[in-house]
Image 1 (cartoon, rainbow, N blue to C red):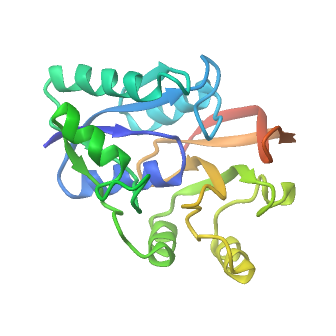
Image 2 (cartoon, rainbow, N blue to C red; image 1 turned 30 degrees about the horizontal axis):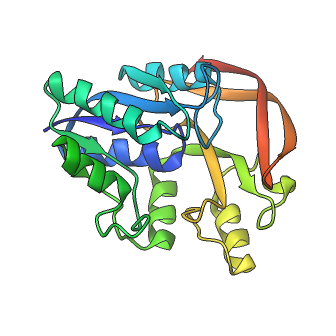
Image 3 (spheres, helix red, strand yellow; image 1 turned 30 degrees about the vertical axis):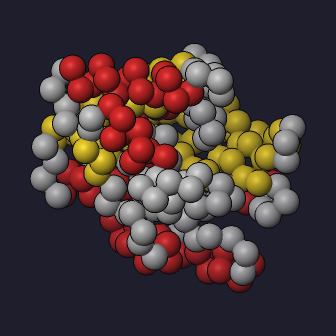
Length: 223
């Protein structure tokens, strides 16, 4: 099936795009919702890094700037454009139900625009998902945290086995960050022809109780 993949630039979107391809789907496009021309929604990943990720895996990226008020409308507009170009499904990293919808928010949106949801991680055990993700060889760095749960010292950490063990010790954090406890940027993996090297960062405390890792200097390096 020809599909478009929702792409945050973080671990779940990279992992699910990889799994969808393994399942035989043809990923024609990635797409990212942007809070501005410079940064993505939620993860706040620089636009140029998103471009570098897409180039590294060889799939064109669609970026759509939106606002909280117009998010769903703009999201659907992108999907309808993809459907008009022959795509039949949407790959998402959904694991749990969202906002009371049994099929999840993205599942509802897919139904309304007429696309088939492809959800490789749906209702999976997040401990197993995290460990299976590690086995693939993807590399991800923490770029956002909820400060009441994970302080600024968690920003910049790589997702590895020690990160997993430390998260479990806390007892109140989902291993995959499904409660929004943390977000990541993927810098390398089995689908990447180039890896992203982060060279300079700065940690920030944002309004609303969030931590943010500003990536000030980086480069894409052939593997």
